[in-house]
Image (cartoon, rainbow, N blue to C red; front, side, top):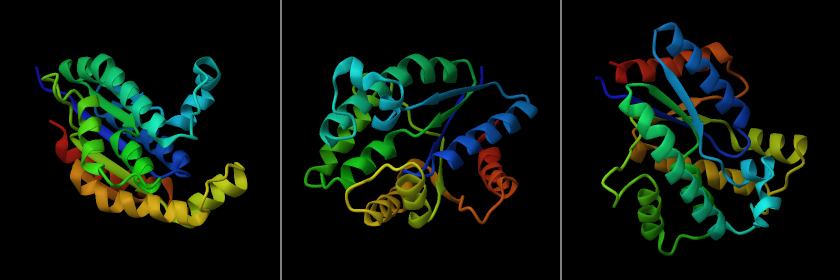
Length: 212
């Protein structure tokens, strides 16, 4: 049986619409080509609040970067073991919305850089390292939007405010641009000036070569 593929689609805070649209478009394109697709998401603190988990666990989601980092690692371990691994073993294509980079980026932007190599090891363990089952993406796509676009969507439209204002988004984007090469990754221009068809064409040109 052919080994499945894990494709992670990442983006900074404020690019959720582009990331979600990108996953939907890729899923449709893969289905047309006859590939069986499984979707998953590594919920960050914002998604946890959306699901109402904050009230269930009385957890300060989004307020304590250290707590969020460990929670996201635990969620990732569960998803990779029980969703991603079985799908890969069955030869399916897994499209994952956000994963390791988002957790690392939040820690970095939050100023937790002194022992960042240790945070990398903790993140690695969440993907199965030390349990003889490490899962690594076959491809990572960074749907890149300008910091000002992200700022306007989150701060002005959704009325969610990050300490630091637009600098927060600039630092987040800078981290992604420097980090993406570690994850078999590529940048895709997903700014509002581009059509969905153009963005999909770029993504598909990167996905096709890794397929069987």
